[in-house]
Image 1 (tube, helix red, strand yellow):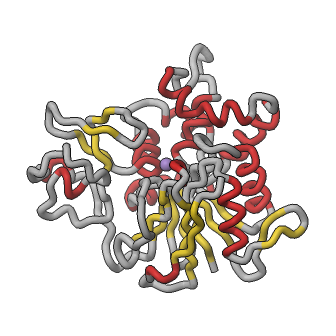
Image 2 (spheres, helix red, strand yellow):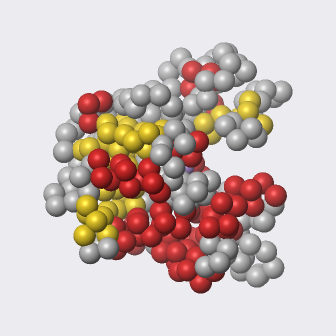
Length: 308
Ligand SMILES: [Mn+2]
């Protein structure tokens, strides 16, 4: 059975504490559990103090069958930041001030290990965009069934190939939409004139949508993942949500990270579980200890407060 573990963002000491709490032991140079496997929801890199060590630990677990991992938006961004476009005159992710800032902690961590970083990038590129196992699903941000069905048939093991990677950098392409949705989640624009500040202090005109809700009778504020009171409490037009599918009660449990939760870990629905509790702000690293149940239970959350 599986322990699904939230976004780590380089907070390696906290990761080790959580693994020990979950009963994983370091044997033959990697952490493992006799009866269980870990599943990492992505966002291993950026922001935190020990990104290189985090990659060492997680990669060794994945390569030795002690864990699975899916790709997060920070891994995807890192790959694009370091990949030249087909014309070779620019990078797939522009080296703008904002993009450099977001990636700076990783650049610093590998400043003296450029070859090692190149090797990690190859490994990160091999992480699947989603995982579907017998009784559960894992994705970094949002489980969109139609996108996942489409790319399950095109991508071997849900791993990006070069063709996918280059197309994904072109706004409007199916690959671009897949990355935006699966790794960053649904977003909608606020009415003209409205904006709010995210946790990095950047001003944003788009809100992240609680994609697992039914989308009936929602307002901009109630459907948004940010509880910012600057958001309008007016009904959100159906036209802004009709392209999304909500996550039905009969679907198998889905696990993801990405959303900067705070406070005590809590299920979003009996089959919808987010395990990101803002370790990137040194809050806590959360795992859900899954034993095959169709209906999840809050008592199976296990967490570690930040110790980095
Ligand atoms: Mn993320």
